[in-house]
Length: 417
Ligand SMILES: Nc1ncnc2c1ncn2[C@@H]1O[C@H](COP(=O)(O)OP(=O)(O)O)[C@@H](O)[C@H]1O
Ligand SMILES: [Mg+2]
Image (cartoon, rainbow, N blue to C red; front, side, top):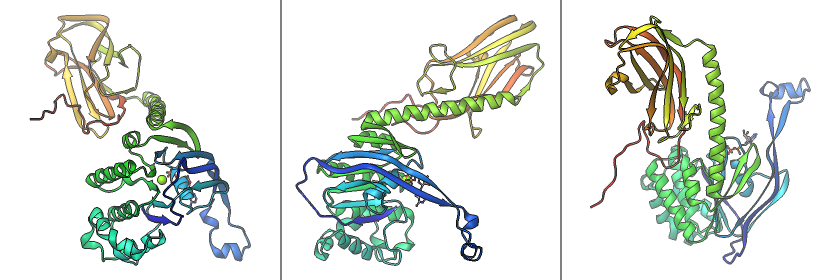
């Protein structure tokens, strides 16, 4: 990501719409490597073969002046392409873009800064492209450097910068040149958390100053928080548009639905391959179901949901004091919870025939992630295993916005005095 200032006429008194994109279509060519050599093209007179595809298909939207506008969507959905078209770095095959006022853009890494020039020279270069005089840039220079926290490196060529440093300088310039319209791609995805927070604070400040801001971000909670309106791009098409919170919520629902589908397919694959099972078999766990609060089978839960492990068993002969247990692991094999019915104090004297044993999480404490479940039934000593299904079941806890990080939801609270 780097700075790319775009020349435009400054107009401080814009009313109404600041940015309009009308019927934007953008086609890319993807060349097949094998036919890329000059030799082949000229000697064999064979044309390079390529396929074309539409990265943007009839995208239209309008951004009112002073609004913060978000672009969301999966990787490859066309967000960066749309932003580059707004910044006039790419030209659309069809459609028009209209922007009122001076545009400043922070785009993907690789567009912008001159690598051989120092940070200082790039600040001046970019400022002048934006139409600022040397004096105006000098006036802002210290603020820019202070914001980027690159005092020590400002006289080194930017090619020696890390991507985090690039972004810091790029963001500092883009937001300190008094643009009317600010375009920002994925600023919240790069750099350390402290700088992200600082960038977000800066955006809030510009928002308060009624600048028009268009942001692309994967940090959905930030989009929902800072943006007034948003569009959701899906394979180059607008899938939803409107109030940012609504669009983010719709998008999240779809993402979770897709994950559930994928996870169902994985389940089927797993069932087809026999899971590792062991035990003497006098008492068998015939089925294991993961149920929600309404008794519906699910493979995706949310932190705080009710979750029930329902085990149907069959005892071929009377079994004395059987103990049911389970262990939960993360995908990477970290043991999260292991417990059993004896620890809970439930030890039936004798079991025979068919029956059901359930464990219920009133409020699932696990945070977002993938988990694997082992169920087991053994004797009171734990030495004799009747039946055990090792990591045979799995479920996902979907990540939610604004959540704790780690494995478990804390039940602690904050206090101030
Ligand atoms: N210069 C290019 N040439 C060919 N294909 C491209 C080019 N730029 C982007 N694409 C393709 O266009 C699609 C949209 O890309 P992009 O706008 O970067 O998506 P996003 O920012 O939403 O992840 C992707 O399939 C990407 O591979
Ligand atoms: Mg992108």
